[in-house]
Length: 142
Image (tube, rainbow, N blue to C red; front, side):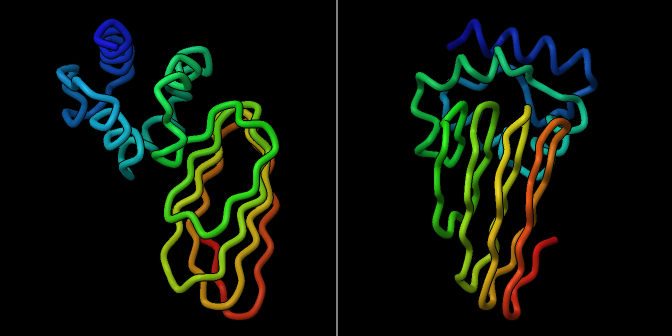
């Protein structure tokens, strides 16, 4: 894990990452927190960072428990607060709760976001991703 973090830090520094990423992170939880922060996701989408091969190294660490789905195949998610869909992932995301939902598609992930009732969703779409947004009732997709 330390080797991966050092490599990520070196790459991120070259791309102009902010000071939030110090390279001293020691756990997967610390990396996930940085990656899924608004600034982290914005940086990653704008810079296509990290590359898909590097992201695939994290699959073995059980990142699905944190809402990060890497090459997950065809999946259906019900009301996730946060979901990051990456690579060979095709997701149907159903949202119908009065909560704020953050859904991010990266590195070619595909999906459909269905928002209904009073759901509010922010959907971020990276390059090469294909997403269909369906809104019903009073829901909002930003």
